[in-house]
Length: 65
Image 1 (cartoon, rainbow, N blue to C red):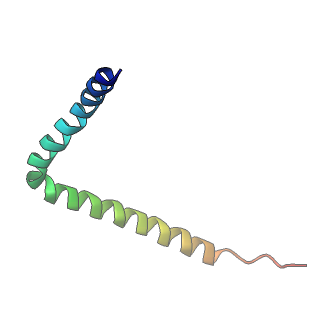
Image 2: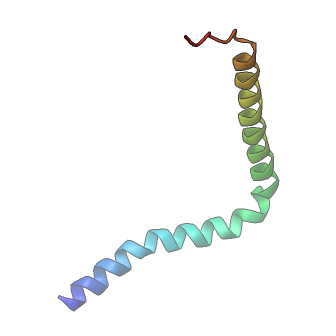
Image 3: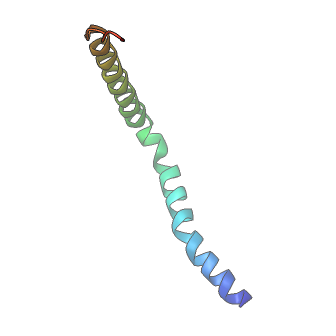
């Protein structure tokens, strides 16, 4: 059972290890792309939030009885 556990663990860890090493090696090439993409996503979220906030402020407030 211990051998099976070790074999299954090694088999399960291999893809993750491969991806980390591959992406880690490629990371310097994509830093600028990652930063630009992240910035655009944050900008989009802020724009949507501001638009929703302004629309809420323009609505006439309901009178409470």
